[in-house]
Image (cartoon, rainbow, N blue to C red; front, side, top):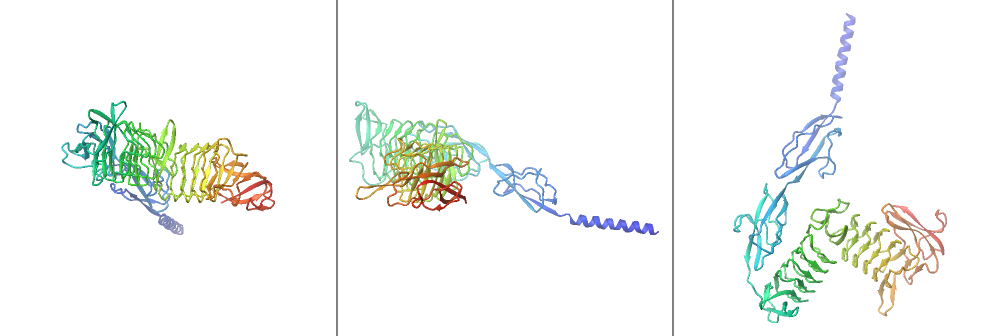
Length: 576
C-alpha cells in the first residue's frame, strides 16, 4: 500500500511538472501585412519554431514579389531559417504589372513612330508626342474619332494613373492649324536653290503667335533657320518647324520665354544656345538630331526631356534646367545599381533629390548634367568615366564630392558656383581638369592633385579665395595651363595665384583616393603664398593631426606649414 502511494505521488508530481513546463512555452503571432493584397491568416507559433510560408496573396494589377522583414522591403524574410522569438510582422512587396500601349498615329507621316510603349499599372506615364505638318497633336484617345476616354494631354503626359488590366491601342488626335508665313523674311542660299528663314519687319511685335515655318517659299525648300532668327520674340508661344529644315542657327529662339511648345524636324543640327531661356515644358529630341551644346540652357520651366538613341548631345545642353523631373532615353544600357544613384532602363540616374542625365560614348558613360536639389554629398558611381561641362553648375548645397578611379576627366565649369563645396576627393585615375572646373567654389579649402593628372586648363580654380593646392608633381607639368591656379585679378591688374605645395608624397586609400603623406619643405616647394595662409590638407574620414619632422610622429608638431621648419615634413592623420 505504501509502495502504491509513493507511485501515485510520483505520477502526480510528473503531471504537475509537465503542466508547468507546457505552461512556460511562449507563443507568438506572425502577422502578414499584404499592403492591400488578399488577406493572409495570422499564425500562432511557439517560441523557437518557424512560421509556415503561406500561399502567395494576390493584388489586382500587381505581381507578388516576396515577403520582407520590414516595410521598406530591404531584407527578405526566409521562412526556412527565421526563428520566431517575438510577435512578428512580415510585409508583402508588389511589382506593378506592365502593359503594352500600341500607337495608332491616324495616318500621320513624319511622326516619332515607334510602335508601342510599356506602362506600369497604377503609375503615371508619358507617351510619345508625334508631329504632323499643319496639325497640332491634342492627345492620345481610346477611340479613333477622338471620342471616348482621353489618356494624355498634348505633351504626352498621363491624365491619370494607368488602371487598365490589359494591353491597349490608343489613337492620336489632331487639330489642324493655320498655315502661315506672314511676317517672315526669306534669304536665298546654296546658290539660289533653297531658303533660310528669319523674323521679318512685318512680324507682329505683340500678341500670341503660333509660328509655322513653311516647307517651301516661292517653289524652293526652306532648309535653315538663321542665327538669332527669332531672338527675344516673346510673342511666340508655339513653333512648328517642318522636316525640310536641317539647321537651326545659334540662338535662333533664345529669349523666347513664352515659347512653350516646339515641333522639331526629324534630321536637324541645332546650333549652340538655340533655345536658351525659352519657356518650354517638354522637349522630344528627334531621332537623328545633333545638338551643338547649351541648346536648352536655362530653360527653367522644362520638366520632361525625351532623347532617342541616335541623337548626338553637346556639352551642357540642359544646364540650369533645374525643373527637369523626367529624362527618357533609350540610348543608354543600364549598368548595375550603385550607391547614391539608381540608373533605370530609360537612361536617367535618379537620386532622392532629382535626376541626372548621362550619355554613352562607345563603352564610356559621361555625367552630362546633375539636378540634385538639396544634395549635400555625393560619390559618383564607378561606371561613370567623365564629368561633363557644367554638370554640377550652381549646385549650391553640394558640400562634398568623391570622384573614384573610373573618372578620367572633369569638364569645363563642371562645378562652377558650387559655393558650399568644401571637400573634393580625387583618385589617381584622373587625367584632365577643364577650364573653370572649380570656378567660384569659394568654400573649398584644400585639394590634392595626384601624379596621374597631366592636363589642367587655365582658370581651373578661379575665384577660390581660401584654397591651398597639394600636388604630387615637383613643378608645373607641360600640360597645365599658365593660369591653372589663378584665383583672381585685382583692380590694378596684378594676378593672385593660389598657394601650391609641390612635390608631395601621396598615398591612396581603398578607393584609390589621394592623400598627402609627406613633402620636403624648401624655399621653392611652396609657391604663391603672398598674403595667403597655407591651409591644411584633407583626407576623407580623417582629421589632420599636424606636421611632424619624423615619420613616427614623436617630435614637435606644427599645425601650419607657415611655422614649420624646412626639411622633410610628415602629415599625421587621425581616424575620425
